[in-house]
Length: 123
Image 1 (cartoon, rainbow, N blue to C red):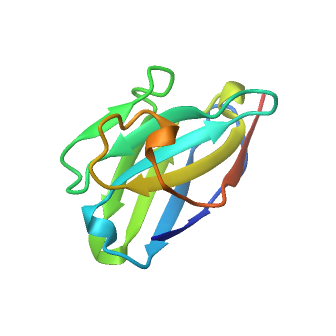
Image 2: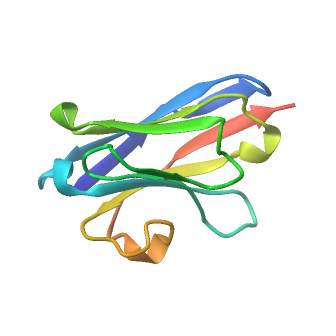
């Protein structure tokens, strides 16, 4: 499956942004989708994930209550709605997908990755 992330940009602290991930190729609807981010000088970290049906979601503690992950399988698209953004949310955001993941929070578990989209939150 090929993934294309988009929707990043510059936003002030406290603002909102939604990033999207469009999938093509294999049946996206059977894949777990995750979002990860990497800030300059830091390792890539888990942000959120959603099961293939959308029934189950997982969040990093740092974004819980502020970010919402969702998907529309009819459109082969996943979303990450980010509210109450903070400067520490500044990073390149990557979407990822795979099937039958044992650990959805581990980036090494995902085989398919998008190219990343920059999110910058100004203070």
